[in-house]
Amino acid sequence: MQAEITTIPELLIKARGNQTQVAKWINCNRGTVGKYVTDVKAESHVIINGRLMVTHSSGRASK
Image (cartoon, rainbow, N blue to C red; front, side, top):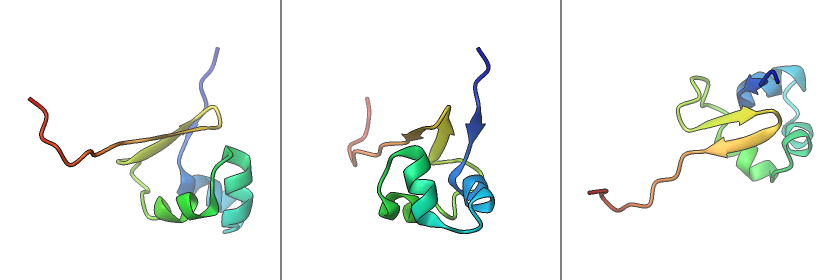
């Protein structure tokens, strides 16, 4: 099985900047798309086979 890995900025190029369309493609809120618009290096999110994966910071230090 081949994994398709992309980012929100890459999808925005395909959607010609339409955040609503990208949100429909990855089944998330348009506000979430806006949150990761500038993450071009995929440091805090990645989309694998159409599923959005994000990093989580709880604010607590891990031991």
